Amino acid sequence: MSTQELLLDPSLRYWVLLPISFVMVLVGILRTYITVLLQPSPKIAEWGNLKEQ
Image (cartoon, rainbow, N blue to C red; front, side):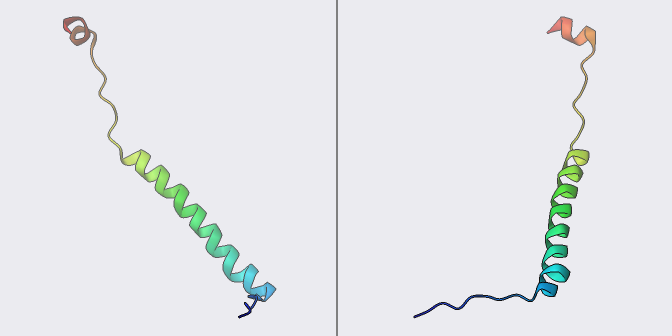
């Protein structure tokens, strides 16, 4: 049983595979920044509360 090689037309590679890869990278970066922005900010303790603890 022999395996066949997958031959891609160069125009298919440039006009389909590269844009899909580029969009996937951008979506990953955007998801990272969105999760950082949606996280609640840490609460800042006041000096009076720190002395009591």
